[in-house]
Image 1 (cartoon, rainbow, N blue to C red):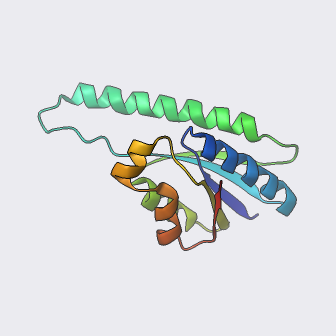
Image 2: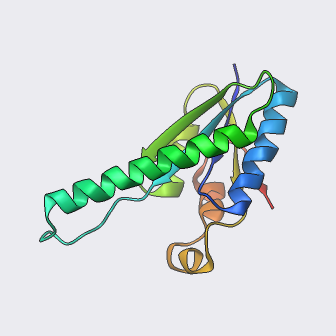
Image 3: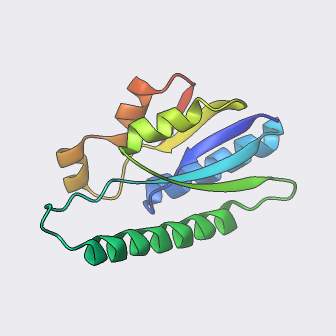
Length: 140
């Protein structure tokens, strides 16, 4: 079965992209995989391991809740929706996941969570377009 991979990040643009991808998946008989990528937590070496462990646990909990909310929002009759939480550089990790067999396209929102993140880190959508080997649909 063909799969459409969708990046989600709790932004309105990502929610719109997920809904658009769900409709596309239904119309093409594809499955849908919602992906949330956590950036590595960078703390100084002097940080205590238990602090890092708590931050990682909180991020995993938040990612799981976000993915479940998005799954409920895109639910359609007959649509197979999978959830995936990955860790790493967001665009590169997402693009690497798109290389999996069966993934025929990816869908991302045109804007992330906030302007500061886009200025400091660059645009996730723009980076995915440049590094992903699969067709990329950017939804406004």
